[in-house]
Image (tube, rainbow, N blue to C red):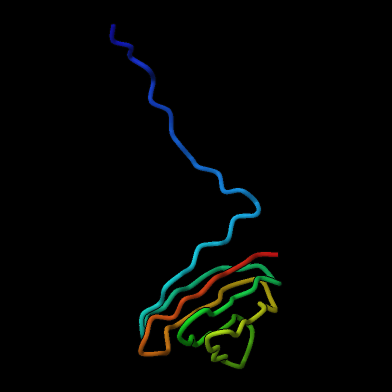
Length: 92
């Protein structure tokens, strides 16, 4: 007996306790994100060059370091090491 069942979209839900994904940035690769104030950008490997909208300073963050976003808006990350930078973004 064949059953013809309707196809439903599948959207897996992440549990609130799940770790955020790790982003990988090769040297000179850039990523533009829109983040809320208080979001944390943690570097697990390599180094990134970070520019935050409304901040006149650029920030270089090495492995083990992090940056807390001061204003909601655009943040640009660029890989700044020979090895890929591994970055994790968490939201408040």
